[in-house]
Amino acid sequence: MTRSQRWFEHAMRRAGWRPERQVVALATLGFFIALILGALYLSQVAREATINRRLSELLEERDQLERDNEQLRASIAELKAVPRLLQRAQELGFTTAGSGNIEYLVVDNYNPARTNPVVVTEAEEAAAVEVYDETFVGWLSEQWTAIRRSFGR
Image 1 (cartoon, rainbow, N blue to C red):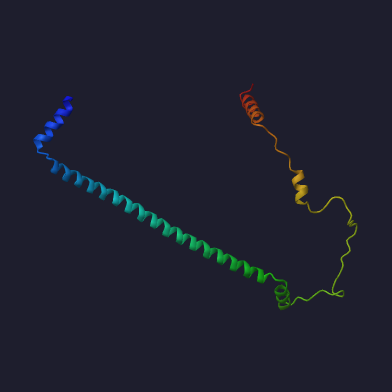
Image 2 (image 1 turned 90 degrees about the horizontal axis):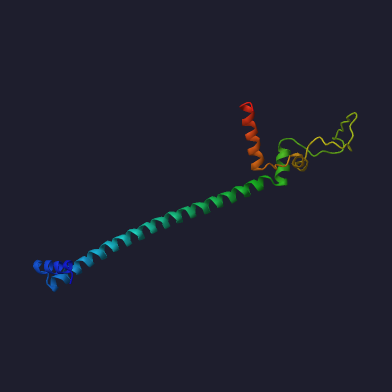
């Protein structure tokens, strides 16, 4: 036996640690360890329950907001319906245009078959946009040239 083992045995004999006392001490230690682990487990379970409750509340709130949005979409669709718009136009004093109510405006030198449009379409605008093809090395060389020019070289 090594010296540290002999010292431990000597300390145990001197303290009067009989096997019964050792069993009681180990059982007490085990009880406290189990108590601590149980408390940790209960705190974890309580935290999970709180998180799940909050998640349920958030899901319920999301569902309610979705229902409200659908109700608003239905109301908007109802207000945009053609019969409703016609009724509202009549309430405001508008009537359907008959052939006697239509006036044509003659514009001198107007050519409906012209090639240059008055309004630029999105496709024409997209075609007019330049394609960005600059590389990092090209940009870096431009910056280096600008720096050299600023110092007069």
